[in-house]
Image (cartoon, rainbow, N blue to C red; front, side, top):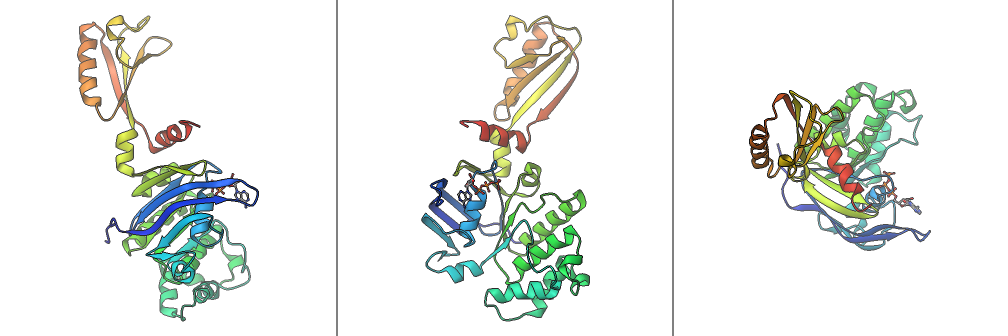
Length: 313
Ligand SMILES: Nc1ncnc2c1ncn2[C@@H]1O[C@H](COP(=O)(O)OP(=O)(O)OP(=O)(O)O)[C@@H](O)[C@H]1O
C-alpha cells in the first residue's frame, strides 16, 4: 500500500473569491493536500466547500491567490493542472441515452488522452460496471449511476480525485462499497479529497480533516490527533443512594447531578483525564459516596465538529 507522504500534491495559497453578487465566499484559504491521503472537508451549508473545489477544478473562476496541482498553476498552466484532477460531482445530468462504455471513454477524450480501452476496462471492472458496459445510463440504478460518475472521473487517470458528497442519499450497502472503493483508490496511489455532511464518513475514511466556516478553513488536523486533542470523555456513575446536591468537598470537579440525584457525570479532557479521574474517585470515596455502576463515553468527531462550528458563530 502506498502511504501518504508529506509532499503536497495540491497547494492552495491565500485563495479568496468574491462572487459577482458581491458575496465573499472564500477568505484567504490556505491548504496543502499530501500525496496519497484521504482528506475530508467538513463544514456547514454555505461554508464555501463547493466554491473551493469548483475553483480547483476550473468550474468557477478564481479570485485572488493561487492553486497548484503537482506544481502546475491552475490559471497559468490550466490543462496540465486539470488533467491531474478527477471530479466526481453529486449528480449525473447528461448522457442518459449513451452507453456506460461510451460515456466513460468520452470523458477520457475530453482531457486529450489517447484511447486506452484496457484502462477503461479496468476502471469498469473495479467499479463492478463491466457487465453493464453496454447498458444505457438511463437504465441503471441510482447506485450504478454513482459508480459511472466515478468511472468518468477516473477515465483520464487523474492523481487527485475530488468527491463531492459521495454517499449523499445512498443506502448503507452502497455506502460501504463506496468506502471500500475509496480505500482501494488510495492504495493505488490516488489522493482523495471528499466533502461530506456525514461526519461518520470522515471518521471512518479520512486521514486528515479540514473544517470550513464562513469562507475560512478554521482547522486542519490529523483525524486521530483531532479526536484526541479536542475529544472529551465522560465518566457516568450510578450512585447507591441519591444525592440532594453535589457535596462542597467535590465542588472543584466538573460534575453534573441528574434531576433525581442518582447519577453523577464527570466530564474531562482526554489529555489530562487519567490524573483527574483518579483524584476524583479517591475524593468521592472519602466523601462517603458509593456507586453501583459506572460507564465511560468518548466524544465522536460529530460532537467535536459541532463544537468547532458553533464556537464564534
Ligand atoms: N454563483 C454564486 N453567486 C453568488 N453567491 C454564491 C454563488 N455560488 C455560491 N454562492 C454563495 O457562496 C457561499 C458558499 O457556497 P458553497 O456552495 O461554496 O458552500 P458549501 O460549503 O459547498 O455549502 P453546501 O454544504 O450547502 O454545499 C454560499 O453563501 C452561497 O450562497
